[in-house]
Length: 274
Length: 294
Image (tube, rainbow over all chains, first blue to last red; front, side):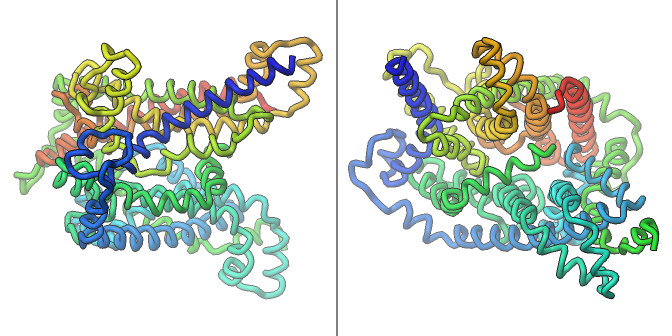
């Protein structure tokens, strides 16, 4: 019986290793080939480079648009995430506490926003008319708009667990609502705000569609669009393409390795809570 | 002080930032899209005129658009089914208490979900390369060379190749939702079932699957909504080709946009919204009804 158990366990581990290999092999191919020259990298072999070279990485790191892309992604993601969290907490606080008509209508509209896809052409038109097309402020506001629904649901759900007595006590003490919100509610919402931050950052950092349509000035492109343009330029040199993509996913890999438990939990919380 | 009067004191202006931003960049474009879809708005026109349902009639009589609709549905249902089937299997596998290294395996299988889809798309154009890609190389090495294909340029299998890429990318996400669902099932249920002599298959059919119904609902609905909106993965892998073998709604909308056919593109966008609502909502309601309360 124990021998059979042991065999069974070994087979399951083997299965897990094969499945992990299916996930990791493409990344391994990208890694080893990023250290190969033009001819060798075009063969896409998984073998280690015969003449390891850093040439590809030097090419990538010497491109100003690589650094610019990184900086733009950082600016856009940071501002959009801060505003999403701030606006969503304010709304969740009022929607859950006040239970007023306006809050209910807003809640329903936000629910529609999770299901209905954006209408991209009218959005471009509207942003051009208001002169925010092709600007940082425009794309940041757009990201705030499309990421608010999820965060409001998440935070409103959590607000229910924050006892009303806290508000009552504070108000009786003469505390104003903005002060109550900043000093008591925000600190209590810390946990779902971390979740909302991880979800929003991942969504914006990896997003392609919005900058593809909303930013035409190459100086304002985030890194994801830089990859797209870089590949169309260097399509014949896979070694350099792989090096560029390695540099793009490196920050994500580092953060994922450090915070994987948090990240997995966050990205699936909304779904599990339903 | 009564409860209702106290509630009414909460200031509504706290809702203002959300109303302004969401209203401005989501609600207004969505509402105006209904109007634009009924006009002949295009890049050459200064004055746009109302043309009724002409855009919709034209779209449905276009053989390319009909192929696009069918591709989008094939893509959405195939990815949804496959990733849920595999995700559930993986969740059950990686929920075995005695399995060593299960946390590491979970982390690895979830990994592609945090990587930008544009990067994954390019990675797979290399993998699917007909002469040198590791997929065909691997098949030849293990003696299955007859299965080697021109994965992205053969119109009969290009859509299948894009589907498998998305399955590879998102199965880990479905798995993690199922894992959370599995962990919420009380252990005593399995213990008493074991005492009653229920075997593994019966426990799966009578305990695990019924109690996992909420996770199945959310997984299927999220997958359907997400895959019908697919864009960058197709753009990078095939750009809708060869011909229009892999054209999906969002690549179709992009091509009408770049041709300057704004009214027609907006009409296509409305059809996509209706498609998502008419498929997403009934599936949600149907699956909800079958859920078991814990």
